[in-house]
Length: 100
Image (cartoon, rainbow, N blue to C red; front, side):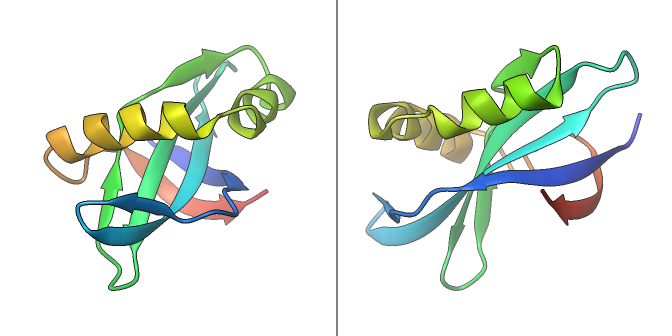
């Protein structure tokens, strides 16, 4: 199964981790059963990226956007810990990355 990746949200504040600043994105894609999965990606200024595995499964695109835009900084701390623990690429199988 290959899904098209959609950038759902970009967090305005940079995340500080491992002594670096990371841009944080919520990404998502629609599954074959029409539900949506979401995960987070952290990218530093040199282009190094870390991604969590699937963080959520939602019944619709709107529900996925609601999830992404409600994430608080404390959640990002835990997500970053999960992302660095996963060998890259770490994200679900992806295809083209689109921006919503």
